[in-house]
Length: 223
Image 1 (cartoon, helix red, strand yellow):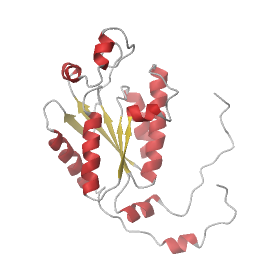
Image 2 (cartoon, one colour; image 1 turned 135 degrees about the horizontal axis):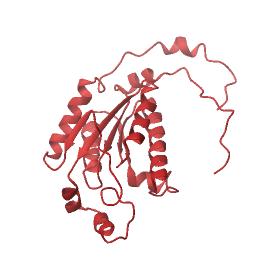
Image 3 (cartoon, helix red, strand yellow; image 1 turned 90 degrees about the vertical axis):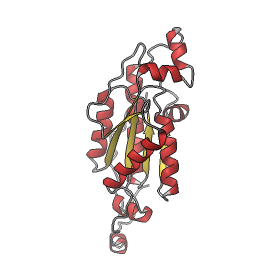
């Protein structure tokens, strides 16, 4: 990897996070779905995205496989690479929250420290972070095995597979604890929607006076 840039500074514009939220009629937030492979993280995120779209709310899914096919295609599954994978996703999520989007991040994210790092990243910028534990017993997740990964892990074809020969650290105090082996998908989606409503994330804040802010915009800013 090349040398890290040092002479860089965050450039703040005149349109605030609150302004963008008012335009969209919603507040940005990251919903972080964590759980074993096959627990149902992606399934509930897809269903929630659909439910939010029907309500006229903008959300976007960041899925483990999708991210590893693109921006994180240079990462493996070592502890270090898993940490970097989650760090990058946390930064992407934060940018999208700043844009007013409800981000649905579905990642095994087995290490509590990594998830806490992403939470702190959001809270330090006054952004909402909601950890959703999609709980599912290993036996049930392995019985589903939609990608055949557990079978390969048991056969030794996949090393460091979470739940088999690599640990999963369950959240101690998630904002929402789902039980995908006991609850229906509709129930899970309703529980999440109710939480978003309780937190006021699906309502429209008051927009600030943009014309006054734009009049103070400095000239010659760098892109």
